[in-house]
Amino acid sequence: MDGVLITLAYLASSVLFILSLRGLSNPETARTGNAYGALGMALALGATLTAEGAERFGLVIPALIVGTVLGVRMARRVEMTGMPELVALLHSFVGLAAVLVGFASYVGAHELAEGRTIHLIEVYLAVLIGAVTFAGSVLAFLKLKGKVSGRPLLLPARHLLNLVALLLCLWLGSSFVGAEGTGGIWALLAATLIAGGLGYHMVAAIGGADMPVVVSLLNSYSGWTASAAGFMLSNDLLIVTGALVGSSGAILSYIMCKAMNRTLINVVLGGFGGDAGKPADAAQGEQLPVREARVDDVVASLQRAGSVIVVPGYGMAVARAQHAVREISEIVRKAGGTLRFAVHPVAGRLPGHMNVLLAEANVPYDIVLEMDEINADFPSTDVVLVVGANDICNPSAQTDTTSPIYGMPVLEVWKAKEVFVLKRTRAAGYAGVDNPLFYEPNTDMVFGDARHTLEAVVAGMRS
Image (tube, rainbow, N blue to C red; front, side, top):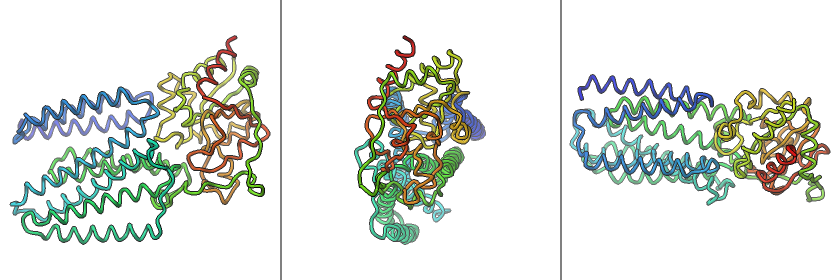
């Protein structure tokens, strides 16, 4: 394909990617956004494969087929509860690709004379960022999968260790750029291992409560990795696409940190979620008693309630209870009451996790509200159903200065007239801190599988 046509195809792909990001910003237009993204990628691949100099189709085409089949299988088989892990794993692929392409580009360009120094800097940066992204994403995948503890690894002098790793990478980079021929391969390999260790350590030091921010941050890393690879390969589309992904991931991370009343530096360096938190009755060292409710109690309260708010959390995703809560919303609204959903920015383990689950269950978008839109309405609410949420409605975030989550904005559910908390057990949430909400006089605990409980509530309301 002619160079001008390639440029036009890349420009069209870039526009489609921008439209895709715009569409994905709203659940109502998310399907259209996905379609734009798929069309843009198909156009980009087609243009790249037909560009002048493209060759070895015997290797490229089978790789595309295998990758497509694997991608479709993974997307079809993954449950919504496993989506955070899948996203983290996909980020690792981007990092690994950048590392492998960087090594291949270095070996293939050893005879390059003009612009060699600039090219070597591009290769080094792409490999370095790719190694950090790969190792960090793999660990994030293992943490979210439950294969590795979510508690932060807080090594002594960990910040000094990170600084030493960065300084070593700078020194190795100087050796790499100054080496003749392919003599810098060992410096590049050593820097890759150090960068991988740095990426692993940075994610290991981040506590479980911050994992949604980590996922969006790794998304940003993968974008900058792709952009660096674009400079390395002189590919304008990779540069633009990587910048789009990197900047959007960074903006999302900033928004989530703001919602948690924290800074991005504090998340990356803080180790939030490392303390187990003190029990509610610290003087006695024992948890206070809670009131337990039965399904009949929940049914009776919902039937006489004029206003209801449902607070979904990761427990709803695990129990797959989103369809049951949608049925409850339909029953309440048909009876003349109001029912809305309150979604915290970091509910679940992935940005927008709860919104996607509720959209999957065909919950109307207009009754799904963000924390800032609905928090002031809890005092005038008759019944609140907390479905598998914990840290995002913990009063100690406002009252206990010793709590690890102190200062984090939370949903003020305890201000409602009656609160039902649906949980399997009274265990602490992902941040590892006790929740005084369980002991409030207007709170009842309903223990058991959330889906089974809510399905029983639906049956009771319809009988």
